[in-house]
Image (tube, rainbow, N blue to C red; front, side, top):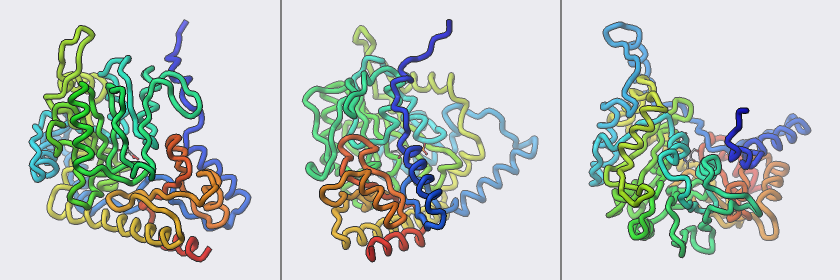
Amino acid sequence: MITLNSNFLKLQKNYLFVDIAQRVAKYKSENPDAPVIRLGIGDVTRPLAPAVIEALHKAVDEQAKSETFRGYGPEQGYDFLRQAIVDNVFQPRGVEIGIDEIFINDGAKSDTGNFGDILGRDNTVLITDPVYPVYIDSNVMAGRAGDFADGRWSNIAYAPCTAENNFTPALPTKAPDMIYLCYPNNPTGTVLRRQELQKWVDYALANDALILYDAAYAAYIRHDDVPRSIYEIPGAKKCAVEFHSYSKTAGFTGLRCGFTVVPKDVVARTATGEKVQLNPLWNRRQCTKFNGTPYVVQRAAAAIYTPEGKRQVQETIDYYMENARIMREALTEKGLKVFGGEDAPYIWFRVPEGMTSWEYWEELLHKYNIVSTPGVGFGPSGEGYIRLTAFGTREDCVEAMRRLREG
Ligand code: PLP
């Protein structure tokens, strides 16, 4: 008889955003005229840049002629995009990454979720808490997480990130094998400065651990002492893989494209202790399970690196960051303790004394008609916090803050 991967049965039933959607739907059905503003889910609202649209049209037209038609592309991505990444993302920051260390994907969710395919099932895992849920759930599916009790998985180490430690995770006393770091952070909107990240790189090198570094929000960094890539940190090319996404960088949440960097120097050990490079293994995995990101989408992504593309994309990022500034200011004026939103498109704030995340979440919905995300939905250390995204329209953002100020 066919059996299933019973790890899937361990997954928590209600995905956070489904739960939120249900509560909002119930409220809307009871209050059909309520002018609800959604600042909960991290999806973007601005259209794609004109340079991206132009590249899309051109690539579509190429597909219409036999001389320029493209079928299957390279699983790793087209060289025109991989080279543009090397030249525009890494070289300007003095980071040497080879074209064959870059793998184009259909977004960072797939690769952050899939990368564990090439890692041993018995590896121990560390996540920062609160956390983007994909790192946990993909390890539950793989059988690495253990059992769930009291809001935690028994085989996952949680590094709390709260106001008390300035959202800087402490190095664990017992070294994990896989370390997930996401900076700028979703959900807290906070960052790790160069010195702090260096500590994690040194720790990973000293303990033969792998850092899975999610840089999906790197484009939002403004301060110079915050690294845009972990490879700006000496030693990182030996112990880290890095995930990038065009979703929030350039509005590709619907178009789907990103890339993963797997440096040739990153190794893991066989059961008998022999070192094996991860780069060829990941390549092998991709060639088997992934047939490449669409040509037209990769052309669209490459357009981000043209002079006009860069300017247009930056304008959109500045738009969202102005939203973040407006929200930070209004929430602070209201007397709330606000974090994030300076190098990231997320605002993370403490709920009023004596309330839980969900209690204040309900108050925001019922009293102000604002949909947010309860911090506790991202992990136990998120209790007592709320996340707002800066990806709304300016009008919604200003109106939501007006309600909060006057409420
Ligand atoms: N990583 C983080 C931290 C995210 O917040 C998200 C999306 O919200 C992703 C990855 C997924 O991005 P993509 O749309 O590229 O799959």
